[in-house]
Length: 68
Picture 1 (tube, rainbow, N blue to C red):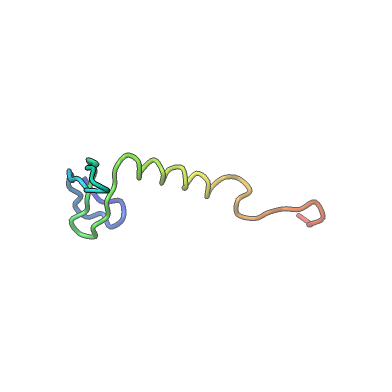
Picture 2: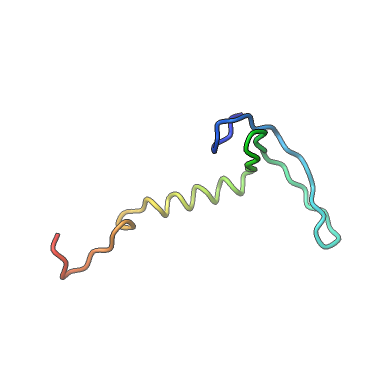
């Protein structure tokens, strides 16, 4: 798989983090070149944010008194 940021080699990354005495499993992708980490939750959030940025009218607010 290729990295979305730098187009480098992304490899499957299975690890766990110890947080407050409990372990949370993580399965995702990590880029060998730039270190970007991605998984399903991260990708879902990126899609939501990108849709909000390109929504109609988000670039400039228009007011009734403003000339078109």
